[in-house]
Length: 314
Image (cartoon, one colour):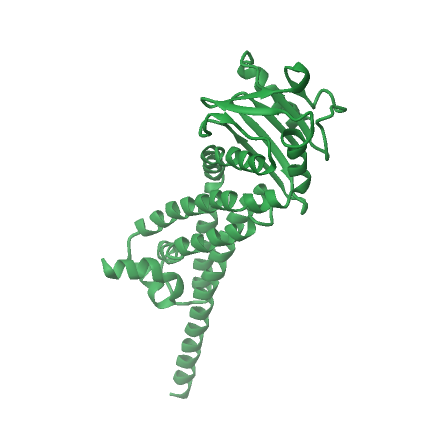
């Protein structure tokens, strides 16, 4: 067991240990690929969560927009939560606000559109129409508050767009509060409620490109095998052996991608970070494979040349 753990976790750091992969089961590579997929997914959701406070703090236009509606001014909208449902008390007896339909709405500020419609009579189709309008009309900055769902999209001062779909099911009953600190807490709670759903979205999206990760490993192994064979290196004898050696680098490559994703998520958008995660994984795996293959080829070529020279002398 100790020998296997040493092989599994240290192969990435040692060419000598990784060569053991040629004689070990292909199951190690399969397990590594599955774990790599999960690690990258966890990195994406961790980056999504960790980066939110920074992005929100870097979005003064959005926060001021929210303050002006719910915390500042005589026309502030009062919010309260009851059993996972949001209720909005809009001044002057107004039932709902649709800032998409009325762009001159007083609540639309700083380039943000507001929709507040907590009427319980709304059906699912009516609710989704608000979000669909924002998507189809390419509205980038908005806040949609419905009785059980929130759709939010804001842009940081650095140009990063943050989007999420949240709810109120974990919020305590009572008034949300009419001060700025309470509104900050409200927005952050809305975001936190989106994490579970967002993880499923990342999982589904990542599963669609998982075949690309697998293809990258298979193609990389093929290139390495052909290079080894063409240059007559003794690193590995068959394609399967090459695949198992490269497979021993997969898990740690995913760990490196995980931390790179965490860092990148603080200054890149969600979509860019998602694409970057897979690229970093493949690039790290490519570099590690090169570090294994190139020295082995050079070493074996030197041995071959030395042997030929000795034969000529004899």
